[in-house]
Image 1 (cartoon, rainbow, N blue to C red):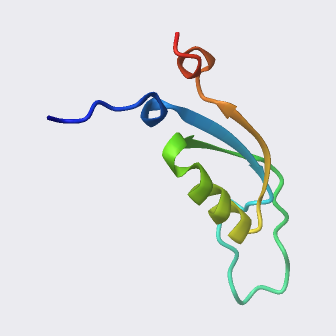
Image 2 (image 1 turned 45 degrees about the horizontal axis):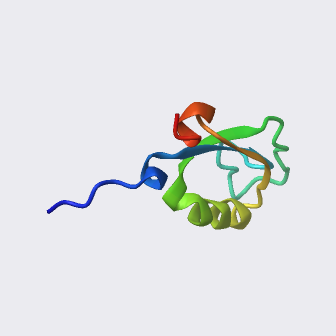
Length: 76
């Protein structure tokens, strides 16, 4: 018997992250590229902690977390 997916398996969240460069900075440059835009990431519920740790390691700051679809997250 195949286990049915739980409601948490279908939930996605959007992380708004500040402080991440979209482009890799060359190692030999003597200047800093200042990130100017926030980045939005779609994250499944079961990978939230892993993604938070990854963002922190890269020097980003999570500005907000919200459900991808309010109606789906409430079980409607």
